[in-house]
Length: 404
Length: 167
Image (cartoon, rainbow over all chains, first blue to last red; front, side, top):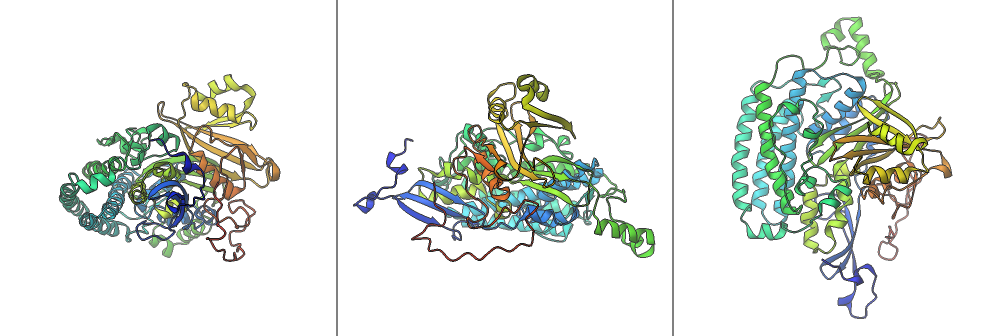
């Protein structure tokens, strides 16, 4: 669509209807679920230009990581993408383990896969539910939140918290699964299946929904790649790139699942990719639960794993071991590594640098939705003001991860 | 393999190379960076379509002081490559922007400028991104104390004087 040339220049017109209006939307707008500001230039109700301002939730994640030990970074990673905190935990743990040259025990790997996929479903349910409610389908939002709550209950049963899980450790995970987890996850996933059937009936032939989503926020494949978009946004444009398939980590190469792709790369495809990805995640969870091996969930190396509490309280060696690990931290050999996992929003990478002391020298997180926000301007120009909300919803910007 | 072919092509432009932990890393000459980036992006032998990440690492005791670290990804060949450029402190902390080749460099380089004060020459719109314009200093440098307080910014009327002049 050719854009009117006057959009690129500011016009002081005598007729106010010809004027390009500047409007600041946000940073706390009720329809935009996130603190973000759009500095808009509007021609009537169309977006002529859009300067996206992020950073309202900046908490100095990378600086704070340099102040503590490696283990003390895990609580910070929970607060990156707080809709799927387990995946962030896993991503950081894998990066540090790569530097250390160790691998978590087999059972811990399976547990990490299971919880990552549970988190992916909660993240997609959050994103899709909110996006549907923003175009008027509030019923869908409530159905999806009902399903999400069932999964949050599971996350709470495993990790002890719903969002701030801090569940992974370097070399394994903190807790094993509680009794009866397999039955509970089966019940939850079956119930979510039923809910999703209802959601599908409410949306897939819904005229209002299709009109609001289809053909909106489209980015050509070339631009999607150039802007560095990954995850559902990239797959909606027809590129079958998924870190779980391209660079399999943990035990993802042992499971059967498909990469869901779209065709046109508009908001409707993005919605559908996320919607169908949940079924793939369910497949992975079912296979992982069936194959789940027995064994420890934490490696035994005393230089990495904390000793059991009985040893800490009853022997001087255990006490010293505990003290050294807590006060000095795990000694990670000098070096650097970049390790990526497939987050719910795309490639979540951790670039970590160690100088051999017990503290990280540099922790850099590669946030998928930060890159997507960089392309938002391009997606919005030429569309209407209400389309900002649906496009922004489909990017699924999570302030904690975008602004860090 | 990528490293060998790059060395053949650019010779002295590749200052160092290593492959540790299964990750290929090259350190390149700043002056030749645009040429090398163009080849990495456009040459079918490399085809790094993705600029995944741009960041920096501060080594205050070392000269040159900063490592600027680019993570590249090739979809078609399923390869990853880490490219580093070493730059000094002060006025020497500059590098050519990668924006002509990858649009993702726009925001990533803005963040790197914001956090480290690296100048990306040729960047279309190099402003702070996560922090506000009146922020003093570059917080991810090692000489920035993590408990440092910032001066209180006087309130500015956003109507008469826009906080962030757009390009």
